[in-house]
Length: 312
Image 1: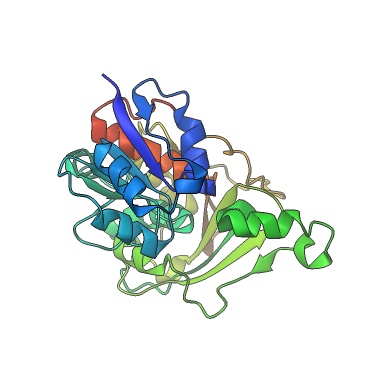
Image 2 (image 1 turned 120 degrees about the vertical axis):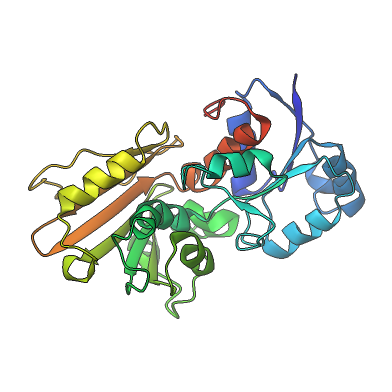
């Protein structure tokens, strides 16, 4: 049996990634839309209601518009926008989040794909908060660095048309008012009482990202060592295909960290580093893979009850 899939927004960055990744998927049949019809509501409505699975790769307002077009109760939706990420009627699409998350995804008709920065943050922090290692009121402050593809078509064009401009050669911080759109989901799904302080950085390379979360040992509920944190996360994610906690090594020499090692995969690596005073957790993944399109396809597979690695 093949499932009919419509990617609403298939000509955007995430939509194209989903489309290209699904070309090697043996369980789906595409419902395509011409570029000239991409904003035609009637054409989109017909395709949406003819599909088994609809991926929404759209701006937030357009994603809400697409959901409003659904009349067929059997249509299942996977939304890559921010529009529904903290909506109680939608299931958050990190299958590895806890032991019940896959069943929730499988049984739901509405899945929201996590934001890329939020994926790196939540996978590192949520297990530690749920187990009481990090207090819920911990004052978390962290940063993330990503390739410019994370900004979509406009940012890709901006960087690639200005590659010789000094402004675009150096890493650039943004969201300096500390109100990044991923903050609400970070707070909700990590289990924190308050939003973290988050400083994202975009740099002059296409894709790949690292989220770095420093922790003061003295503020944890117990005096955990970096190795104990690493061992805990290793046990938490034991058996997972896409999330790997790298073995802890005392005095690891990581002078230069390659944050592109997971590119073109749906993999996410977790590193725990540190010393006698402080701990650093780093997550590494492809912002267009586990941070977007790869995660969307993984969720689709779980919804359909097929091997979640299919096509990935």
